[in-house]
Image (cartoon, rainbow over all chains, first blue to last red; front, side):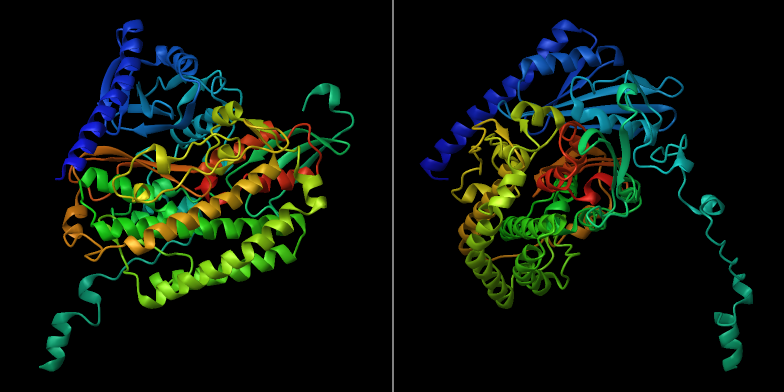
Length: 199
Length: 379
């Protein structure tokens, strides 16, 4: 490694540290306000906040006030099976180069979160899609009609793990049911039969 | 529909049968010639790519990703590849990094060539459909020589790329760039200096940087507001080689509205600027491609079963930021959950806010200026 490369490496490491501080500062600010929020560093100057659903509107409002370049990237659900679900929000702040991921654990039979689509209109359709695919209710959302699914699949929640896409749903699809395979012994080109022929 | 306008208002479905509406439909409420309400509808093209990804192994997933947006196939498949590489901790050979970056920029050019023909077709300028698409054929020929396929290229794969550059490919790429450069000025003049076109496109579909950020608009749409948001510079990806070339993020100061605002006309100029920068990057990287392997030889063993983890792949696509969030469970052969962000998901939604107040004839123009592609929002 030449001196020049070493110097560059050293400068880069300082820069990365400064950026990580930006991520950590915001996480600390949130935790000071809401002690039941947990934070976890992610790769590439990212930070993750794990929060109960009661704080989501306050945290998103904080993001909106603190960063004037907050870019709403994603809202989506994850089905963790055995009745556990998660809703994940991802924001990207360009000037501080901060990737913020907010995770809300939810339980089945109690699947709701407050909407943030009035603060970031870019999330309106993401929330609508999460609602139709997972059955997670976004309280206060102005329009929770089906977005991508046909009417027949309303209330079926296709992205849940319990929604099977194997043969068990074949009748529903209207496709013809395949003929049952003949049993191995009945096949004409079976190995024992060939051996019998050669003999 | 609000009660006070219901007497004279007309509801009109634009699509899904309209020629300009390839797989989408938007419900417009019109009073006279003016749009008072716009309700974009999605789902006509929905194939549930996210569920499909849960049943494909980690080398097959990129095939589904590129089918979401064929014009930018090299870019569309990359977030998935990046996410898998992060979880499996695969080292990509140096040569493959250069080749990926070059092909992603060629793909960006191809996507924009496709877009301006499509836009002109939607506006009824048929000459402008055919002329750029003659040049696009040369780009497709280069893709064909490289990958054997004109559209479904399947180039990037976890651990590297699939096909090496051949002499014939480099010749065809040169030819494509030669034709593009020769005709670019002519096309710019045809679209941008035409007084009719200028009169139609200026002052419609306006938004500011702040509005664009709130609506989640990215890529050329927000860079047209003189806001240099570009993941190629902002997010350092060690597996791409954008830092090996001198280039500036293309931004545009609107001649009508100044910095911080853009209309449909500005977004069109911006897309031509994007081509210039992409050409600059390709020209800078092509001579630097080193010798060596193009793929990690042990990639098959490394991607058969992945450890448990979560990764987030992001790329600056031709239409904006496209990302993929991937979760795997321990020793799984397929992803547990994959969430795709298509940039056009938000640009299509934005019509709801951009359209009211405009005339019906402006609809196709504003829609086309956002460079929508139906596969990105229906997935």
